[in-house]
Image (cartoon, rainbow, N blue to C red; front, side, top):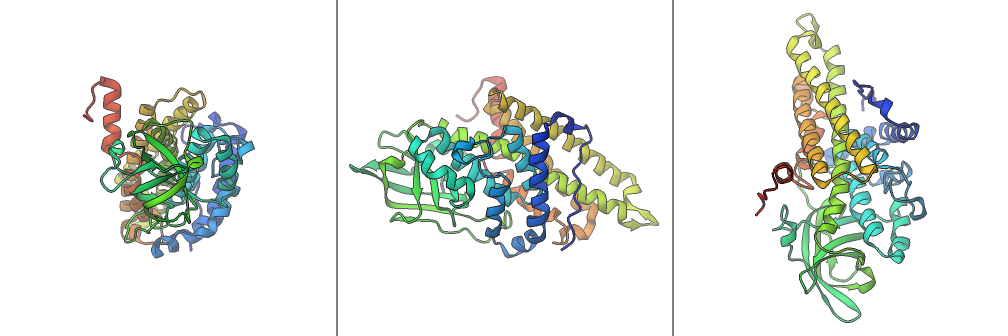
Length: 392
């Protein structure tokens, strides 16, 4: 394994906009990624295995629920700190960032935001420490971009609910201890329920043969007359707006995370372009290679400013779902284009596991689709600016 020589680009001195706490949090995450993720991630991706040994380290750097208050086990950090942690982790690998995003924004966030005090005390500390791992069940085999059409449902059976249905493309599901599952009541209203591993009729088959997010565990959630205690219903919000609020938080993390993947591809390509000799000089001296590199750093800088501004708005409680959609769509698209250009700079070496670029490129093909596809986010922006709904 080659040493991790990554240096973070900051062309517009955006660090000047960060607090000392932000920089400390980022440094802790960056150092951990260099020490614990970079040396093992290529092998994990080749083997299509999630490296479970890193769970404790993710907890230690505050990657699980960083913005959850300290009284519930979180770090009590702001939204920019959360974004920076996701950026550094995805610089290592999108699949590892997915694990942290799901735990934070799709499991801890709904329990904190919509759960009872008893649920917060029962689950959040264990989730923050990594003792419990969680997953989020919204997407179904026939309902992805249209989650409101879900057929997973639960019925009142006296002292418990009976849950039936299936979810798919669920990160963390093969090893998750709990699942926050969204299902329709007998009245057709969407609610969140906490389903625990070991409940009879609940299974989590793993999804195999992925070409993307190979170092992340993906699976299904199957519910066959699962008896869920009534105290496991999230009581403080129902309707489709509840899971969409969770997705806003996760999409915000993705907007930052994608920058990390782009940075890694750019840094690798820049270093290679300075070292690789052809026609008697470094390939970085040729105009076409400089064009690629100059456009990369320009797009990264624009994405950094977009993410920083969005983080400021999130801290102020002013960020809209449409603004988050724009950042997610733009920054993932940016990262994909940079990965492809960086691969070209490396030529044939770009497809090997000696470098991270091809792994990032494959991972980003999932990131551009999950938690709102590229096209869906475009239509969200279109609806926001025109007031005309293209979804119906």
